[in-house]
Length: 201
Image: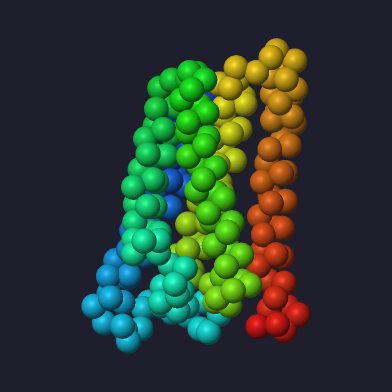
């Protein structure tokens, strides 16, 4: 029983992590959406994630950057994260997918990853306040992006030439994808902390 579980995890750890981070991201997006409704109903309400002057959801939600065309960004997360979760479950059953599906899913998570990075910049350098749930969503979308790209490169779902496919597979086996992800997270933390560190906030 234990051996079967260990074998399952070893064979499908990327898909399991994608499902995990998609679930976390959905929870963050759903909570943000609920709290956005609370703010609309009671503009002066203090939210549970209003920790201090630096970490304050309400301040971010009241900013003009919290929505597009009147639609809160968190609503898009509610729609997007389940798709990523379903893809993770699909990967468990069928790791090898068609090229167009691999590219399509990658473009989707790339969009979420890019937006999350942009929001981190906005929070640090424009708004001057961070939303804890937004940060959790950013962590989740970033992880989902790197995990999905890693999986598609590992399975050569992009239909790369044999030389390029072997090159990326060797790098993944050596753990370069993990190292790159960790370096990216550290870089984003330093990037976000920079204006506060130098007292511009």
